[in-house]
Image (cartoon, rainbow, N blue to C red; front, top):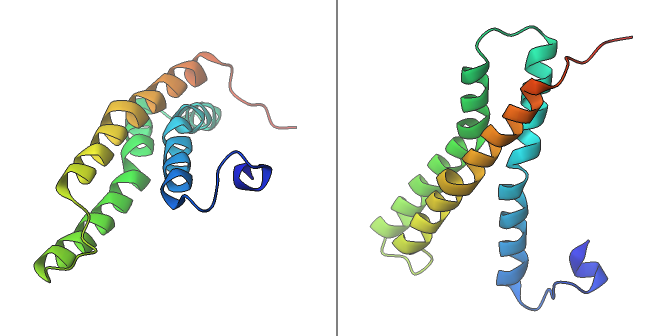
Length: 118
């Protein structure tokens, strides 16, 4: 959408990918909030475990697949292998920004009343 409106140029591929990654990281607040509200609605007891699973589940699986494929590229001495510093940046984005935002969203979600079904 941003590219179609002219905010991001498709000619600069790195900017579009970085904007998508940043948008995903910032959506951690929404993810934590929705998890907390739904978990509270279904009367869950281990809310800490649900929040940790939200923060680590999908990103962890994605990173594991990405890193294992990158290790294979490193072993084959491919030029397509992602540099180690880029992997460290991804880890900082995940643990330094995304995960705390999930917990922040969960904090506000657990303070709300549970959803009521009609």
